[in-house]
Image (tube, rainbow, N blue to C red; front, side):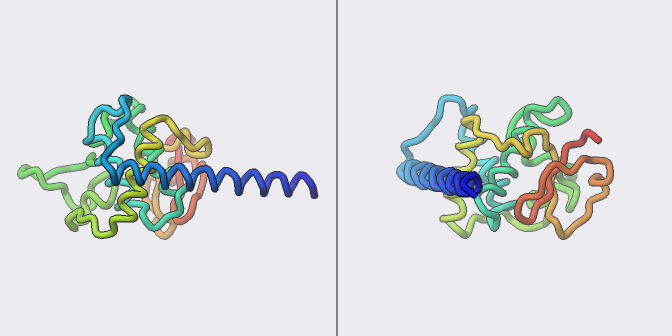
Length: 177
């Protein structure tokens, strides 16, 4: 009984610390005062925040963090482009530079809709999550994941991948099976 209380208390403390960090990062972003030296450029922040915003803005913090970690896992993997924006926008393109519909690594990029940010609070949360991940924060349960999908779809590639976690409405996979 005592052990369960400690575990529950530790979880609440971790959640509290993360929430405080996200709030502080959001304030810094709003004031335009933050720029970590480990970031390659503002494009990395924008592209990763874009993935988090359009792919996971309805998820809890931990789900947004997991999506961002997957993008960074791809950046570090030799099978994918070596920068955040190229990973975020990877897919097939028409000769005129427009993505082929439904032929992208991340569905938001080639769903035929314009990427318009309409929820500023959600955008600031996505930027805060992005900055955390770009500064090295990761999530152990998805540390090997290079793929994910919403739990209401069943993509062809999932049969050849190892499910490593389900967080919120997303399932996360490693390509090793």
